[in-house]
Image (cartoon, rainbow, N blue to C red; front, side, top):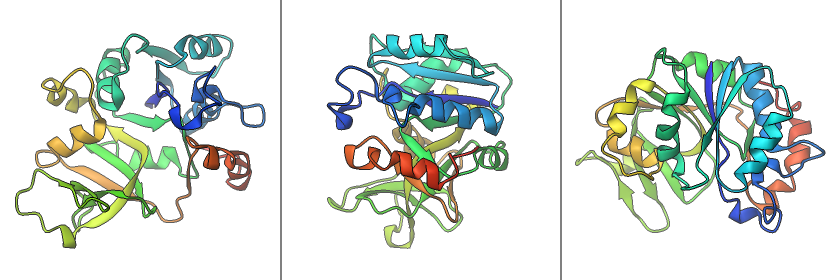
Length: 247
């Protein structure tokens, strides 16, 4: 399995914890989100992982150099320019084994009880698959009756984005994105026209009328976004309750 771990974020929401280190290295009972997620990926079958870095990137590079995760780990260096999720993935393309196999993408600040191995295997032949949930939020991805991505909406502002001109918003299913997804390298050529910095969700919304981007709601899914102080405080108990988040 190939995987990419997004660890380049500024960690703004976690200040002051991230004033002197990246959020990927903030300690949780002696462990870091970087260590925890890399171990999850290893248990799920990952053999090569690309980690992107920006904010205090040298600390992540040094941290990885002192540990053996029994995987090939490469760094995609964004210290000069933070490229967002889409631009970051495109920059890392050449660091992966060129075999056509999909890439499992995971945000470093997301913990879950999802079986990453099962999610990857079920979706390895799709263009892209997004792990989604019924989590309450103001911004939702929109899916049709077959769980195909068709748009996005902000329920507070009423804004809708979709490439489908006659989309019936009321008939769509609304799910929140988890930050975990699979991506086929066959999609990389479709990114050529995008600017240097762009969101992967913007990319998916621009191509979902041309390729099938599948939404994958998972029964019993538990998610914790540790990127905020109020949720970061729950990280240790979440790890314990979910069995140390095994892969």
